[in-house]
Image (cartoon, rainbow, N blue to C red; front, side, top):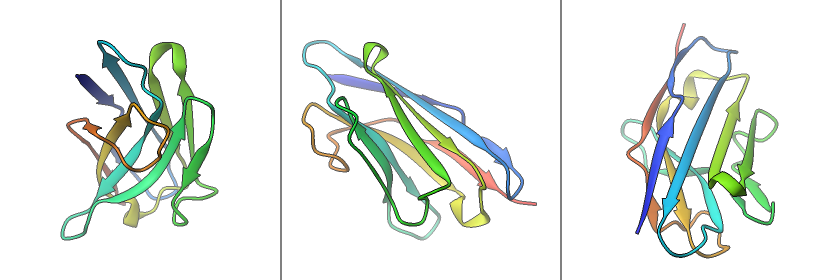
Amino acid sequence: QVQLVESGGGSVQPGGSLTLTCVASTERFAINAMGWFRQAPGKQREAVAGVTSGGRSSYADSVKGRFSISRDNAKNMVTLQMSSLKPEDTAVYYCGANYYYTLNEYEFWGQGTQVTVSS
């Protein structure tokens, strides 16, 4: 089984920055894909960014150039650096992970962390 613990959410003004961190604990197999989804009120959950243990990454078009995802394989940790935040980035952000190298198709999920962008 895999457990994911997220941290770093909060409130920020438009144009500000936040960093989200997620650490995965696994008993047996290596975690090869980790990433972030988000869900805003009344909307479907959507993929934000993901990264494999080999460094392959993907981003939603809406966050390209503003968000950056990185991975520390030794710590099974993924970090999402968010800058130039917009009110439409407001959502609950969920960390996901998988044993496989497939991005944005996660088997394990964190509890979610709220990000609010408002003036």
